[in-house]
Length: 183
Image: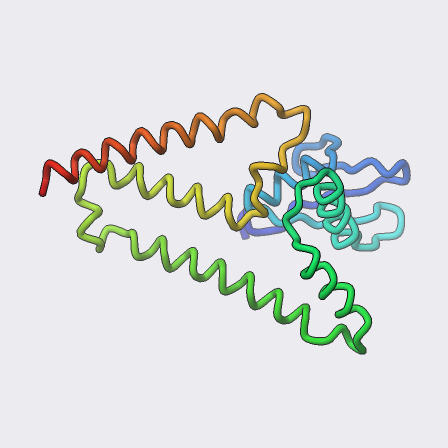
């Protein structure tokens, strides 16, 4: 199993500091959110007790983002989640959420497959750039709308998506011009 496939092990010390076992350094909740946005699974273990704290920390990350006004979860969804805790056995909510996200990932993969080399449009100049932009867009959409999830320490990274968007617009305009000339 490659490093990207197995969960990144984070150990929580008695001081509540979080330690990345791969890079041998301390990390913050924002760092962990970044690992997840980049497609990495994490596992957070209490060093003293061996308890798995992953769920607790993931919920804390979500709560912090919501409290900063980065509202991803509508109030009606939050209400439904609370209601699901009131049902014996949690109701169907966990299975529904898991299935919904699996369907979203599968749809994303199918869309990428449809844009593969079998597609006649792939012979068009600039198609590779368009496909890379589409992949980046889908990754951003399925990773919790990460544009609002950067930390204050990474303020300079906030400007990169704007620059990327400008590049995408420019390349799209060029691609449209080339298509017009082909017709």
